[in-house]
Image (tube, helix red, strand yellow):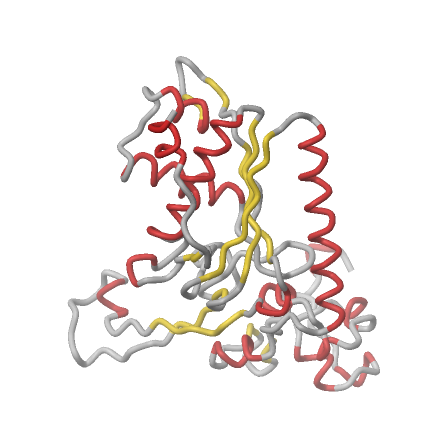
Amino acid sequence: MPRSHQHPREPRSPDHQGLSEEMAWRFPLPPEVANQATGLQTCLNPGLWLDHFTEWEKRHGELKRAEASDKRRRIPRSFTLAELRQLLSAYRNRWDRMIDALRAQNYIVQKFTLRAASRVIVGLGAGSVLETSIRLHRIYGFPIIPGSALKGVTRAYAELVEGKNESDLVFADIFGQGPPQSQAGKVLFFDAIPANPANLTLELDVMNPHYGPYYQGSEPPADYHNPVPVFFLTIGPGSEFLFAVASRERDLAERAREWLTTALTKVGIGAKTVAGYGLWSNGVEPRESYSERRKTR
């Protein structure tokens, strides 16, 4: 039959594929993939559960519209299993080797650990098959905080709180300058990664907007609108992460670390910081700041 006259491809029945009803229709997978997709119920990768294992509803021929928490309830939210601990340990070892390689090239690396003092959500508005998302490692599925986000919150803190801008030489050296100077920054901001699988958790949270039609611009706010809960995953309080910045100039690395640490502990990172999310704690007595040391020299 010519291609122009072919009918849309219909999904094959589970019996035809020799698969169980649950396996064939639970996930919208091509037949050749579904035949190989065994053990989905024991998948330990939160990223796969969140981005790909969205259930398919045969009756309506679309992604299942069940309560959002149903899907997220299957996502592993603790990383204490032996397989996950081993995976995280290996990844941290590679991260440490990268730091060592930079130090061997005469970079000054400022590495430190912070603990989430509240729930943290980075990547809430990222593209997702669901209403919300969270930044997870693309391959391994554990939560990370991208270096670009850390650099952004550090720059925002320096501008809004410290009152710095590109006319300040230290600020320009750390973050770079736009045209016409077009200078690259001299400080590297690394992705923050989990430091300890024992206390790393993902927690389910919920937003409950009461005036959906008003936010969509179709109706004025009113008490008769039905609240529609929106579930999302967060990094749980107490989770420890490794942070690092590096530069060939010690003063720049120390100043970047100071601004980054203060931004994370005083301002927060990610979504909903105004509501108290995204804050971190170092769990130790504050060290003498870079500016204070400069005054004593």
